[in-house]
Length: 249
Length: 300
Image (spheres, each protein chain N blue to C red):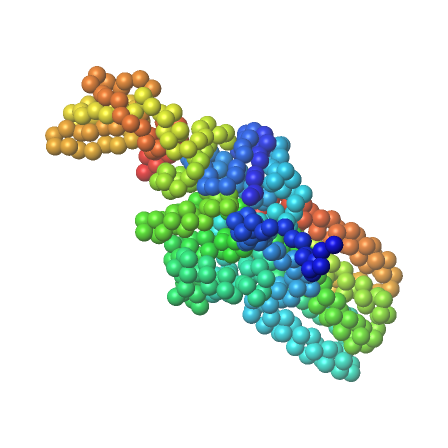
């Protein structure tokens, strides 16, 4: 029997192979790409951060205008139908301004480059539309709450009167994004604004258009409008995926 | 290391086939697409970037369809389009920071990366200036900078040197050479010298097809026996210039030195010469060059 302490058994370390192994590990670590996958919220915030100052000025201007409008239309003795028309015209213009964020993505030959980025054009358009939708909803809510009651029409009818011109002007705007080319493209915002404005004031020229018996027509126009808007968004995304429109942009 | 495989990739626009059944395997190194305008280079590059959808065939990155890889593929990609887009009211710095955010470059790294690429292209001093005040060459350099922001494994540059002066072009070539290790660099150009010295592989494109492919030496070899040198009298030189593809014409005293690209000896006394990449280009794109010349003459 051995009397000494038991020696712990170990492999002999081959220093050369150890060094080689460490070099290989170091190389593998250097080659490893650490990728960052931003959350949806992070993407949304970044898109907001890089909006142009003119976008924010226009948004601020529209908000101030909304407050002035509400104050003016709440004065006693106001004309109900005129107030509906003014509000729907305002709603259409707000929608137009909000969608300018989408329009910007298609300007200055940026669309082709944006489609190759991690956050690609399709995703950027979705984010911009979401932002536009949220602002529009807030403005619509303000108008319905503060002006709807005074207009003489019920809240539901008032909502329809606001929604129909707004929906169709958005359809027109989105269509123009991909339909206009060349020199005409520069007039997109202006022409969409003018045409949408005409659309919004059109009911004034149709007698009794805001009367209850025409509510069904407004309802149909809204339902068809929602359907066409969905189709228009699908068409826009299809065009982005196909890519040809981006190369011509 | 990334690998791109193109399998019978075709793109058709209504009645025109822009890219016709191109099959390729692209690995680490610089791949230079050379071709006349309308040869299909830009269309092919746009398909490689995922901007255009191929009409037929497929593009695979490390064995997976690039369209299926979606954001994962775009993470690996840096692209400089021919018509480079920018927001003119943005400063160079803000523009690059915006694109870094869209390219998912981590926020804590983005600022340093922006400075790094600005320095690389020599725009550090102008970073706070609005892009609308930039010259064409500066805008092109900004385009190159944005393509490098995410340290891409696949770098695609469409006509990167257009608008650059000779000094800037040399600088750009050196940047590309230095960057090519460990990544696929694909560039298209119709300027032969852009790819002659830096491309590991040269691909000549004509009418949507790859007509020549290989190293600079291999491609020039294809024109061996087709390049001729000759000293002619001025009248004869004019006749030969009209009849054949002439890659070089120089007055030497009373005579004219001609470098002619032709399948057979163009005239008695002409001697065979060592071909260069420009000769190969001229050999393949003689008709295209003539069409441009005719068009220019008609416009004049």
